[in-house]
Image (cartoon, rainbow, N blue to C red; front, side, top):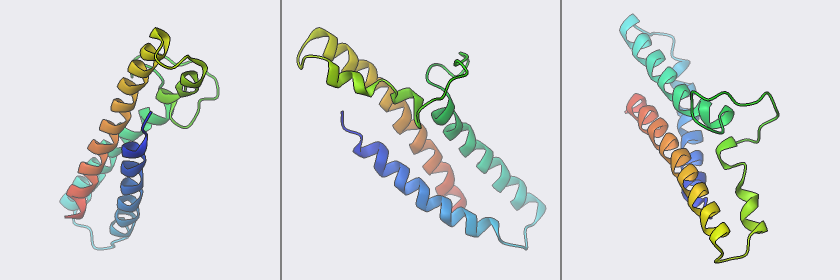
Length: 119
């Protein structure tokens, strides 16, 4: 399972976050600018918070248990428990790739929102 794209996007978003923090410290906000900035920050949060707290669908309730950093990928260890090339391995690879796609897409959307604020 190749996590490089997700890690690259997370790193880029972290760098953008540092730039947004500097931008947020600006003291001469006009009301319209502040509202636009706040709405964009909320949109970023709407993309990222589910990655940290939801392992299923956004509207499904997760049990009140300790979740890993990215709950959608919590089952990635199961790949090591399967025989390579087996139907079970293929099923896990397919499921985990779909979940990874969700993570990567949410990160991409958050990046695009952050970049729109910096430009």
